[in-house]
Image (cartoon, rainbow, N blue to C red; front, side):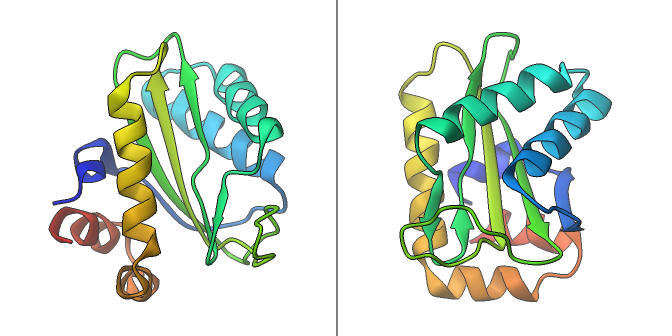
Length: 149
């Protein structure tokens, strides 16, 4: 089981999402967390956007790992999103992003936050994992892949 698996819930796996920009992505995440976890949508969106303005969270190979710290969080939340169409994200390899893993952690961040980002980067660096993820057409399949990889 990946370290991320315990923080990723089936209801937080959103496939074939209509996203036209990073801003729309962050707004979608904010709305989702407001509806499912009663977190303030504006705060989530603003935190993700502030982090993205510092430097792109795209890591290449079609993957982005947006992340932010939120004071109002009591625990870590992970969301996986797959846009309907790969989107520009400012990756150094210039590839559009089709796999997005969002990590939201309580502020202040600790070593666990860095460990999760490193785990996510290792996971998505594996071409076999990315190919298996692409074959998943249902949220439960994505969750099972994270659980058993």
